[in-house]
Amino acid sequence: MAEAILRERWNQLGRNDLYVSSTGTYARDNQPAAKLAVEVCGEKGIDLSNHRSHSVDPKELTASDLIFTMEKIQKEYFNLFFPSISDKVFMLSAAWDGPENKKKDIPDPMGGSIKKFRKTFDIIDQHIDRIVPYLKERFSENR
Image 1: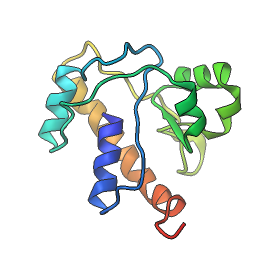
Image 2 (image 1 turned 180 degrees about the vertical axis):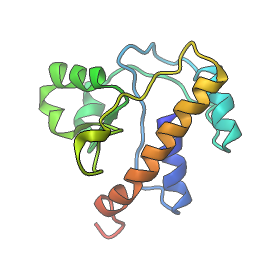
Image 3 (image 1 turned 90 degrees about the horizontal axis):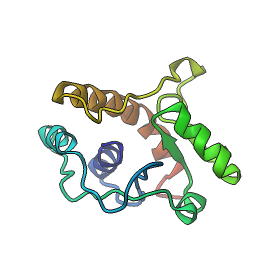
Image 4 (image 1 turned 120 degrees about the vertical axis):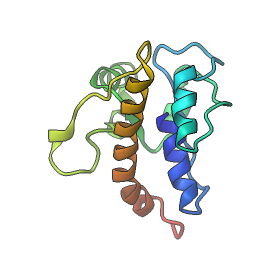
């Protein structure tokens, strides 16, 4: 959902110059998004129906400017197995918003109800809206 939300927000700005990709630390390749994730995104006008999962790709990580994680354990995973990228790995809930006091895991709704998926969508959406100004500045069109 985070990939789809960020891409949608960026496109709403009239921008298409940001490559956004989602990877799963335990994902099986080429799996569709969870049915409830597709439904919740659809309720918000975001089409997730064509999304396919892919597992961690070291080349993609190395080429990335920023990597956001939903959970602290995911950040620790990247720092442990890919120490060369640790300076660009951030928890989505902690990045660029003052003190680290917002550094909380974003719960994985898998296996939960539609209500849980909606709540997780809203949490991700708020964090995406919070970091978009930073991304606009960092990836300005005049760069």
